[in-house]
Length: 403
Ligand code: PMP
Image 1 (spheres, rainbow, N blue to C red):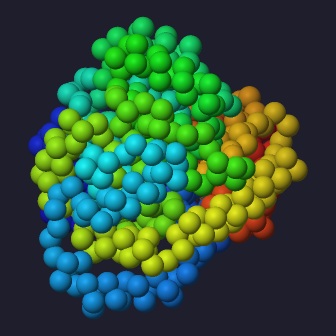
Image 2 (spheres, protein in one colour):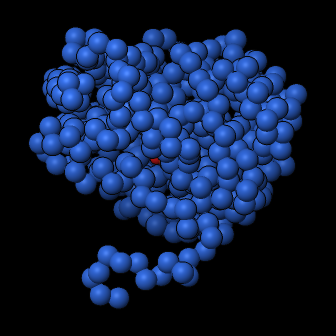
């Protein structure tokens, strides 16, 4: 093919590819990464907070001293050393009953979601998920040709009554996909009481739960409520990642699965990637063995708390009347609701022209809703940049309101 952008392969694509469109985030990345744009759009951790020289030395040694294993193929489930360490990390979140034998190491938390979708979903199957939900999960579910039914949330997370209604309307739903703690994109956390309620409801309905927990350790005010998996062993699949507590570039995540299912997941992963990167796993193992990783999580928490406060302060000071937003107790995101009549998707080109970027709310719903919302990231930019971004955004909103 020549350099044309016309896609001559359309007729040949598999059915699951036909509904695929560029995610809003991907389309935005190119413009949002220009230096003059204040990007509140991404979800990148603040990697400069890591002791990069020490990490570099560690990686060097991993190649020179441990090259025979770190540069070799590994086993599909992931190394036993790392799986044992993952159990230690999960213990920090409150999951004390996990066995390394039930952990499958994945290529980021993203592959964990993909494996579970491949394992459970046939085309047309229904999945329940919070509305809004993680854009990357929507991508996985769309590729699996699943139908997503959103369940409403409020400041206390998923609303149990809305979950009951969704189950009644979709009795054959395959699973609930949920991010109970510091939710992406909404920034809200499911309360203790609701955790029990949600688990009881799912248990009674025989609905599997996929709990996605990349942010649970990034809490700003004491420890987050214990994960769902810490409360129920059966029927809960727990996914997490080192992307937010260490570094996303390594692409190391995991799924903790009920024992009976673990072997199938390993087979799916072998078909998918043979084995997760031995080098990346070795890097995480060395990091957890030789470096103060618990302290580093505290460093991330401190920096993000300061940035959250800066973002919330700027929103309070600068947003037009009628705008509301969530107050996340951890994680990376704030979810804003625009004044009546504003459309976050339509406003985006004007925002980019004003040198500020965000993600329109529509990216986080499977059904095109979310025009009245947007997601703001606070992990990546320094406090004064965040304030400048909010100043530019509120200028654009004032103009839209005056039109
Ligand atoms: N789940 C959620 C809710 C996320 O926000 C992300 C990353 N932004 C992931 C999973 C995947 O992360 P990774 O593949 O980097 O581990």
